[in-house]
Image: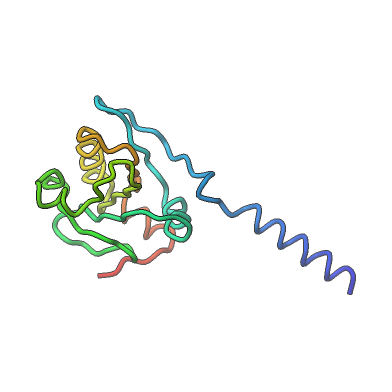
Length: 140
């Protein structure tokens, strides 16, 4: 009985240590002319979705599905249109996570938002493709 308890305790500690917390997610910084944004992995995004407030924006065009809990769909090449900016938080320090199918369109949108003064922009590197490759689902 004591061995089972010790093994259970060991597994609990080990599994807890393997989980990332939002504070540990730093992403890979991408420097632009006007500032920077951060690329994150599907594991990072999954952790962020469970543990922090953020606005999740699908910028892929044409529509190819959503990651669950997506807040907005705004075409990447129209992200700076006044009617689309009005959908984003007025606080330019708000955490905004962008994604598309492969990561390219969302990188373009991230750079555009940084140029407009947004300071807390995150990009799902390799987009929905990477999300699906890690066994996560896309809502069609």
